[in-house]
Length: 494
Ligand code: GLN
Picture (cartoon, protein in one colour):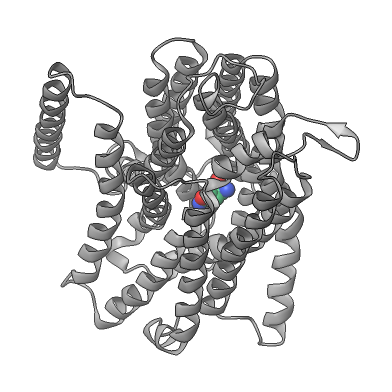
């Protein structure tokens, strides 16, 4: 990699560039996310009594579905994002385009008016373009899989994500919730702009591979994609024009199809890889083992991603906004998960190393079981403060801090482990697309929540929460019971 001899915590200097860019991107992403559902319900029938208005006044059920669709699309779009990096613009340029679209999206959100959902779609699209490519570029800084600093590099990178995510709710959440929603969204735009400037100044430190298009599209392929794209876009325009002009349009016409796409695409993508005749027997077996982890991860993210929706609304409405005599806006509790990550990640890393030194490191199946049980248990525990607050009493924020602690332990068993196992189990042919496939587990999980809501279930009701907790725990138990079979399918990977 290009180097002027300077390093960043012993890592190539380019890691600092990617660190700063991702930190600011996550700052804008999680800052807006902390406000999203609160803004959607504010001023409407389900807003907290006496809370500031100025939001969209949407009923809570719809707001929770809209949030789930937004999250599902962010992760779905990581796949075409990776494709643009691979085949059209190269990772560096794709990140620049993505960051610019994110900035523009937040600017649209910052302007009060009817364009809120256009801004939201732009943020999802821009994040999709940016997220997978920036992770790819971290990989480029190290010479092949043998560079021993690689895992450490990704750990430093994960820190940048969580530093940005910790600061975001404190700044953007606090100002948006207590001063003005749109000012909050505007600060998100400024954050991403700072990230883009950092990226442009630091470009010279990146590996030259980051500017190359690894497998460029041929003119023929390009025309084929353009034709297909225009066909589907045209079909969608005609479909929605007919619904719109006949006066039948309502949100369901967007939320239900996007929910179905969010389940169908992950299913079809996995099936196509699994059925690919080009794969060797070893690769096919590894893909079979991957399906178990993927399905469990979908159940994991289904609950985990509700931090910004169900738990955020519970914090706003049913949780006291003081702790140890200090008062704070409810969205500040969105910082608790990344703070737990920063505190617990080093502990986990050293425990894995200590166990590995005694050749007792738990297998991926064991880590997944533990993660699934933790996320399921966190929702069983959540039933207690819900019950305690059902008569209007405000419960202490310590409940949520504890729930986030359990979820973070789960996250540290699933997220880094899942990323690493994704790259190790990937068939050679799909190596560069697999990151995007892993993010589809989030898409599937979030889409289940959205479709439950669209089917009329009360997403913050105890029935749904118990169902989700049972499902996640069950997924962990199923992995545990089948561990021998899965470990066998994984062959040399563990
Ligand atoms: N907090 C991590 C991130 O933002 C993990 C997100 C996830 O849901 N996969 O990158």
